[in-house]
Amino acid sequence: MAFPLIPVILCGGSGTRLWPLSRETYPKQFLRLLGEESLLQQTMQRLQKIEGMGSPLLICNESSRFVAAEQLREIGIEHARILLEPVRRNTAPAIAVAALHARADGDDPLLLVLPSDHVIKNHHAFQAAIHTARQAAAQGDLVTFGITPLAPETGYGYLRVDASSSGAAQPVLEFVEKPDRIHAERYLASGNYYWNSGMFLFRASRYLEELARYQPEMLAACREAVTLAKNDLDFIRLDSQAYATSPDNSIDYAVMEHTDRACMVAMDASWSDIGSWASVWEAADKDAEDNAAQGDVMLQDCVGCLVHGTSRLVAAVGLHNIVIVETADALLIMDADHAQDTKKLVEKLTKTKRSEATQHRQIFRPWGSYDSIENGKRFQVKRITVKQGAKLSLQMHHHRAEHWVVVSGTAKITNGEKEYLLTENQSTYIPLGVVHSLENPGKIPLELIEIQSGGYLGEDDIVRLQDRYGRA
Picture 1 (cartoon, rainbow, N blue to C red):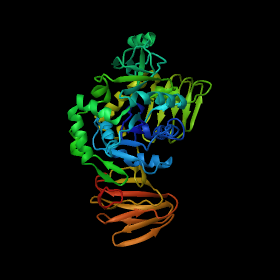
Picture 2 (picture 1 turned 135 degrees about the horizontal axis):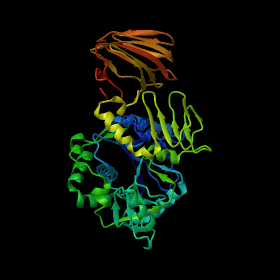
Picture 3 (picture 1 turned 90 degrees about the horizontal axis):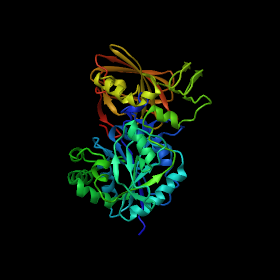
Picture 4 (picture 1 turned 90 degrees about the vertical axis):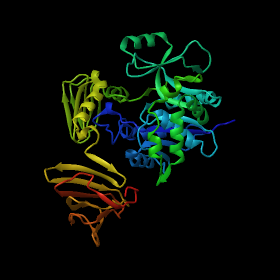
C-alpha cells in the first residue's frame, strides 16, 4: 500500500540564541539569515522535488500567523493549512494535532515532521534519506533522522545506535541529552552516535497509537482541541481551553524514548539547526579571512568574525572570533566561543521587562508593518507601511489623538462620518475618541508618518469595531 506523504512544519519556536535578530514576535524561522529567502521559505522549497509530496500543514502560534502566511504567499503557496496553537505545548502535542487533522478524512498519510528553522545544503542527500525512511515508516516504524557528526558538538542531543547492525534504518538504542565536551568526544570516537536532528517520519495512525499508549491525557486533550477547532480565514484555530489542558512535552520524551519501534536513518546533508550565532557563521559564505558579513559592513584586519547589520553602516577593525549583530534598537557584541550564552542574556532582559527581549522596533501586522521611530513622554512617532489593497481595522482610542502625513502612495481615510483620499505630502488629524480607519486602495505600498499624542500611547488602547482579519 502506498501512503501519501504530508509535510508537517513546526513553526512555533522562538530562537532566543539568535537575539537580537530573532525575538519572540519575529523568531528565527522568518529571518533571512543565509540568502534572500527566510529559513521557513527554504524549508518549503526543498520539499518541492520530493516525489509524492502533499500539501504542507504548518503548526504555528497565533502571534506569528500572518507573517507565516505572507512568507508562504511570497513563494507561491497561497492556501497552506495552518493550525494555530493557542498556547505553546512543545512538539509532542503539536504533532498530535497534525496527525489528528491529517486523519480526519479517513486517510492514514505518512507525516514528514520538520522544524521550520534548519539549514540543509545537500538537497539530494536529504531527499535520499527521506526515500530510505519511507519504507520503514510505511511498515509501522517511527523513524528519526540522525546527522552524521562532524565534531564533538555539545549543543546537540545524540542518538545511539549499533553501527554494525545491518539495514538502512537502524533501531535507536538510546536518546542522549546534550553532553559535556568529554562525553561528546567519546561519542564521536565510538561511531555509534549521531546528532539528533529533530526530524521524523511515521504514519499518522502509528504516532497516535503510541501516544495513546504512553500519553493518553495528551491525546485526549489534542483530540478535543481538533474536534472543537474553528476555521478563521486561512487558519484553523485549535480550541484554546482543550489544548491548554495537554501536558507540555517533546516528542522525544513523550513517545520516542518509550516506543520499541523507534529507528534511525542516517543523513549526511550539510545540516545545521542554526542554534547559535556560531552556527550561523559556520553555515554562511565567508571571505578570505573567514569573515561572514551581511548588510552594510566594512571590515579591516578582522579574522573569523560574523558581522550582521540591518539599519546602518557597521565597521570593525582588528577583531578576531567576534560576533557583531546590529538592529535598529539593539547591538550585540560577543566572543563567538560564548555564542550559546545569548539565551542567558535574553533571560536577563526578560526579567527586567525590556521590550527588546521580545519584539523589534518594527512590528508586523496582517496589513503591513509599523516602525516606532521616536518616543517621548506624551508623544510617539511611527512610520507605517500598508500593503496594496490592505486595510487597518475600524477603531478608536480613549487616550490619544493621531496626525497622519502621507509620504508615498494613496490613503483612503475614514474619520468619523467623513471618508476621503489623501496623497503624497497631504495630512489629516484624528481627534481622541473618533472612530477611524486607514486603507490603501492603490497598487503600490502606502507609506505614512503617524504622530501620536496623549497621556497613554500603549497598543492596548485600541478598540476595534470592524476588522477584516478577525481581530475585532
